[in-house]
Length: 297
Length: 94
Ligand SMILES: NC(=O)c1ccc[n+]([C@@H]2O[C@H](COP(=O)([O-])OP(=O)(O)OC[C@H]3O[C@@H](n4cnc5c(N)ncnc54)[C@H](O)[C@@H]3O)[C@@H](O)[C@H]2O)c1
Image 1 (cartoon, rainbow over the protein chains, first blue to last red):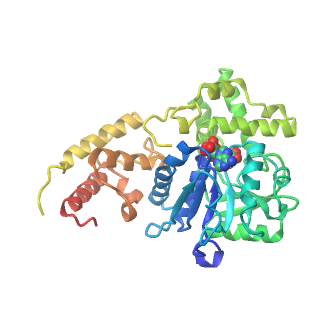
Image 2: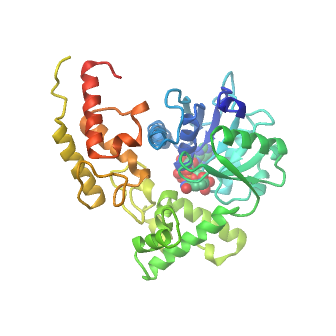
Image 3: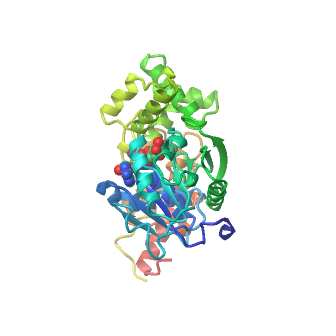
């Protein structure tokens, strides 16, 4: 039963910082499992469309049999700042999940602001793709409460979650996050802290190479994806995956990896940089390596 | 129960859906082909069908109707639209 696992049924909401691709996806995962969400984004326009995007995600999950709470979805409240949303009767969150832009300073600020408002012992979770948790720990008042979860996109359909334990992460924080994820029917895989952890450290330079192959004229975009799918069992192909991630986010993450590992394979290639400059960000902007016109991101 | 001008003839629904799928996938479709089979839509895009049906036929597809099986063929989708449009007329909302 969900009640045995903590948050679902406990009545406490989950606080989600950032209403972008991942924040709205994580919110949809929780809401589809009957957990209330307090969603915060500094961008008014983003926030204005959040409810509709989340509803679309929740229905997608239902359609694909990935969401159980068709009759009792969690409630959504949104706000431009955590003040007020994370305090007061019924508002104290079971955990805070940060999914803001992949920028160490932006994350440090968002994490510190939220941590200052919630009781000690509340897990403060960063959904960073690649920034080491120990680096973010310097920004928060209680590093023992800080931990990483690296949900894959879309979080409401992918059932495995990489969980990153920082040097200072408390046993109780890890246990609470395991319970939270199990309650949302996700399977946590706990790994140690490092730039890009496991999945981004392997996937992001691989996607970068796939883009280089296309830029070199070796093969077309669909050919690269078809080969990686058909021959190597990759579920979507690296370039379609890049579109799903968002090319801007991918570039940010590659820079994080490049700066911290010195691996030249992580330096975002020119074609990727050009596409971001031209606003071709992938699925969320309607166009990336493929066209998504008429589709809702 | 009254009949309503909002209701779309099942044939028209099917014609529209076949056109939608052909545009979307670049291959020909019949009313009984498996939409999610080879050359069809990936499951990840199943919601596009929901959005298309809602926009085109003025229905709202929610709760228990959100099942992949209801969208597996053009035939089943047209049955769903007919059922929802009829329920809308009757005002039962079921
Ligand atoms: N896109 C993916 O596939 C993916 C997968 C796993 C992890 N991630 C990680 O998740 C995080 C979010 O990525 P995304 O793709 O959703 O990015 P996004 O650009 O779609 O959304 C980020 C959102 O954060 C908001 N924001 C910025 N500063 C904020 C603050 N201080 N408080 C509240 N909101 C703030 C922005 O306005 C924006 O709406 C990043 O760390 C990213 O690396 C992304």
